[in-house]
Image 1: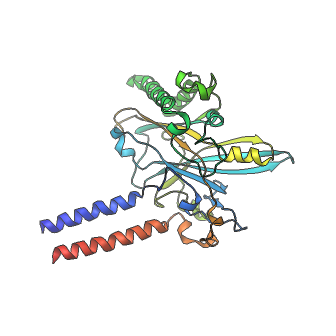
Image 2: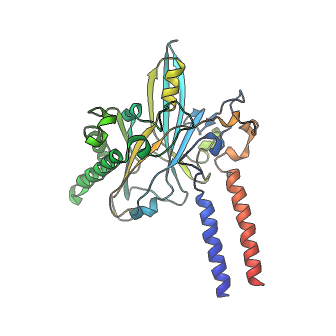
Image 3: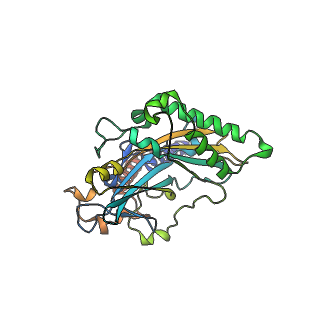
Length: 337
């Protein structure tokens, strides 16, 4: 019996490993999250509830420190689209979603902020070709590890300073606003190549606390056709939107669409029950990825694809889970024999 319990324990760990479903590369796009096809069967159209429709998507995991294992599995998702007006101006829209495992309880006991470094986008790229839809990497690849370390260290120190006086601690939203301003006003030598002496166009959002955005409910997504997160059981929360204007030239659209957005995410203990014991800060770089899933010869029109919905498992997840289940069953059978 003890051996059988051990077998079931091994099986449970194996299933958990599959359910974690690591991404097959640092940033994935519509091919991996299984966006449905647009009406033209050439482009994709990922509609997430009533929050937006996107022809391109990018998904990447948030790095977590060894001391913040409870935050493991968090993701950032970026959606991009554009609209035209006045015959000359094109509006480029970026939407940012926080993806969270279904069993992760992120509430106001844990203070949490996201700072979006939009002003850094023009000065960074993965490789020399800024218009490569397949280019990807980490923030260290795009900005240099010394710049990333300087900004993350500064963010951690700033939040530690804001919150050290437990009797007069600012609200979470105030912490986030101050962090945005102080980071934008900073001037680290390690980032001089990118900042050109001063930062601009930083925005922020509180992820927890009063007024923080709420996760999209399953019933809300009945109006959508897409759930751009892996695994599909993870929640999605629209955290921030950012719009810039440009011309209708194809080059302007490509640069806006493929821009990399660095995001500094900070978590800190706000009250009893916090997921972290100390301030945890990290930087994530996300961009939308090509090619369109609909353009691949191996896929048909995805608008009726059951795998693209919010409550369905991705095909890779289903296949892996089935294969693992069969392996575990065979293992236990042989063990019992």
